[in-house]
Image (cartoon, rainbow, N blue to C red; front, side, top):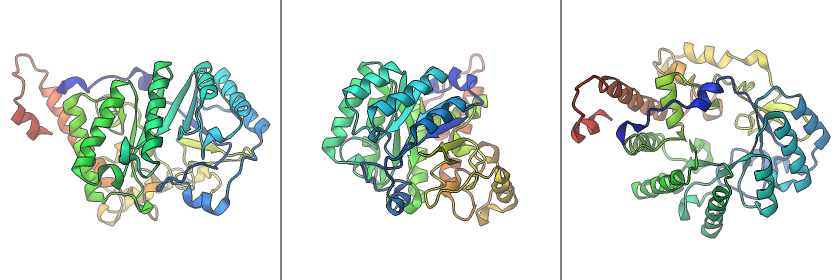
Length: 368
């Protein structure tokens, strides 16, 4: 139903102060995804599996973060005993665990660990068949989809990251197939994020096409009651309930990412790897707010955010998506989503008056 999207997320209300630690025992990976934001760093540095497990375990024990995710590279490259040591430490601390993986190495032993330690498994997949071409071939994609069904059958929480690119959204036929893929995942109670491909990857859509795709997906999700997919759902809940937004809408700087910090293999603490893709830098808390001051003093036609009505709902977007400290290159897409959501909120608020007839389809389409 059209009005089914507005819903208070109890989890988001409880976790307004979530801080996230990304535990990266290795930045090595068994895949070569075309658009990976760690690809350039990995090619220059040739990461290995020489991590300091005792230091990482002790760092987790001393962490004040209430969300700790094992990340990579590909974290399942590490030995299973070491993986269990990390999972058990995190589980004792928080009662749950999380891991982000490409899924290609998951076997029965891993599934047992995920069940034992209440692990939410994040997978990266951009659609079925050739929609996932920038990540893997058709056969490997099909195997991953079968694995997702098996994990859900075992009541393992599964989330996905879908990256919008030329492979899955450069024409309307592919976009319709992607919608079908999202619908099937939603029916399996699998949700996640639909992220834009970074513009310097060589795989991205044009900014105009990306804005159109995000507008199309927003309207489609509203009309079909498709919930649980970010950035759309989190932007809706922020618009209506002032619920917190994820890290890409926080005041991060290239030299300081307060929403997420990374623990490298030797215990070194650094920033989110999205902003460290070309070179890992030390975290510098003194830089917090510097980018925001620059953006709010720079006119919009020069890449800033001065006078933008969406400033406090975006803060210029992720600094990894910008050049020279300017706002995100996906600004038009973010504005397009918020405009649709604002119209929807206005419509649903006025539509709750007693005895008001429901809108006809023509009115509904013009509204969105």
